[in-house]
Image 1: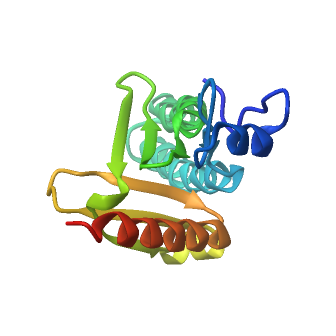
Image 2: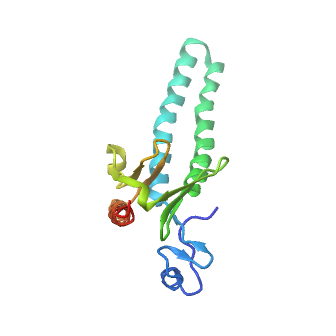
Image 3: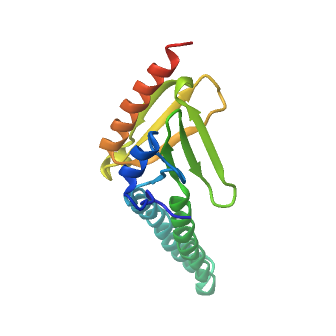
Length: 180
């Protein structure tokens, strides 16, 4: 699965304008992937959690049970390798597309989910950023609709893109809900 915006023969921006829709081309929606900063942050957190676990396991088992048992410290290190690959696949699976009437959010490797959020159904659009995200210069967009089951969030965006998306979605939501 490819991330980022596909480039049409006339360029992505020209293709979207030629089709007359916001973020769509003749071939379909123009997908935008997540920035690589989110992947770097998640991989660093993986290493920061599992390396001390490996060292602690090795030292404790080596001291209290015996040196042969210290080999179990390799399990968290194997978890780093496995998690490294899974985090990359998960990051590549996340993408979103702004269309004329709704926002598409696609995610998932084994269980692929695609959420369609009509602009007229949006009640609240939040930009969130925790302390770790702020350290890495990232923010997320959380969408709230009337349906309680809607899980519409886009994690790990650049703060400027998150604010732009929030403002655009809010304006489109207000325009579409005016007739309700």
